[in-house]
Image (cartoon, rainbow over all chains, first blue to last red; front, top):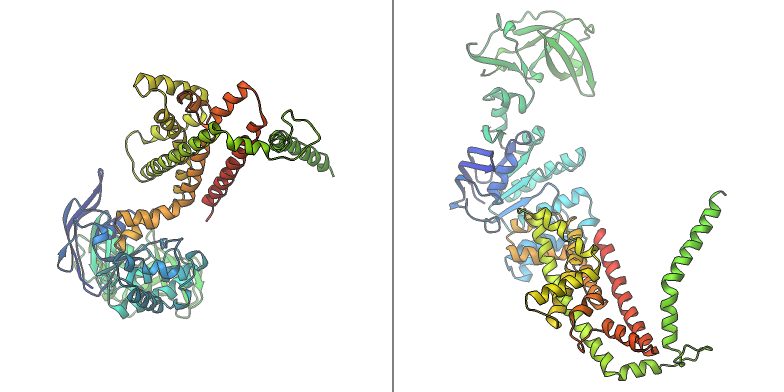
Length: 337
Length: 261
């Protein structure tokens, strides 16, 4: 287990710059999610840390060792791939034991450690199966056991849950978090699913166009995004039209700034609120019932706003009529324009 | 109801194909066990021709020669072809497409033309006729078959398997021997069997490139037929057909496995 320091790393593919002067630190034992749209460089960053790519500039340290010129097979990492990449010609036990055999671990110890790893992912009974005889979730667990059995310094996960259906995915998220806590391994996780990033990680890094936009604990990134992209990518943002700013109570001066609210911070009513909270007027377009929660789509000065609340907290409203959306001034997001 | 005449025609068609393909071979095989040297009936079972054949030093020498050349061709073509397939699969380099396209003409060009061209070329560069020329010729003919079968298998190979192996600490050799080769093994076996068959059954190129008195089995048979036909030839031909069919049957099985799983 080690911390990972990436400093001023630039990686180019031909003319295209995939990573542009990226610096970021992954703390020892932390669970770090790299989040970004496709083409943002998140996978490139993960693969550069893994050692599949060598950066044109910058340094990468795993623990105390500079590794930017060390090939992947000498970096002592564990990696899990999107498609699991299990060896089809080997049994589950042989898949898990591959890294141990490469390291010439004595047979008895190899057997014990394979058993331990399979126990950890609750697949002890499947040791002699072939990957083709396993379900998607089971393959996933085998891939995880295989990635951690060698006690690597860092665990790298490349969208490992994206191939699973929703229910299984939530189960695996909980499972992954449990195992990560249990062995305390530094984990870097690439995903394009913001909910997954929020659920799993204790730090999030948002990437865009090969640069880190913002890195920090999920709550901090969510509550205090540094720019409009971060505000819109992690969670949803309702942008305040400039015309509506007058008369609102704002956390900072309006000059050179844009303001937004989160859908769950809003309340909706037919009359203007009299409690001194911020409020804007809009036209109710749609109310969508989704069990426990409901979503309202409201047109505010030509822009579409979204409100999410418990269905019982939303009053009966006339469709197509004027409504007021209100929120606590402290819940206003402010980013540089 | 309307389909039944069509089905019938189809069945007759299939029967005719099988008859014209295999009846001559079956007749030949039968005659190799007939005591009469003039194909006289009634059939009298005898293994005399096989005994005679076994005592014919020329035939035995040619057979050993054929097998040795086929084995050498198989070994060389399989190693070179597999290496070439892996390189074509793994790397991008200028002229790669052209190289891949150039692999197919040797399969399509008549062997007669290839053989003539090789003979002219080998004399021009000083190799001339003889066993080295035959071996080079056979390898050149067999190589495309190996590359095509191994490449077909490789096209379904998932490169993240290699990445996964490397992430677990495997060096290039371990990745190749433990991950890549096991996956393409059926393709390699099928390619090797094709290479063996191409060499063992090769007449035209061998005929042009081998020195008189140093001929392979197909060349010897051709020469023998020109001198006068004996059921000895039936006997040796029956053996060749049996071996070739067994090899092709195995190749087909392996390349079929190559497609699935």
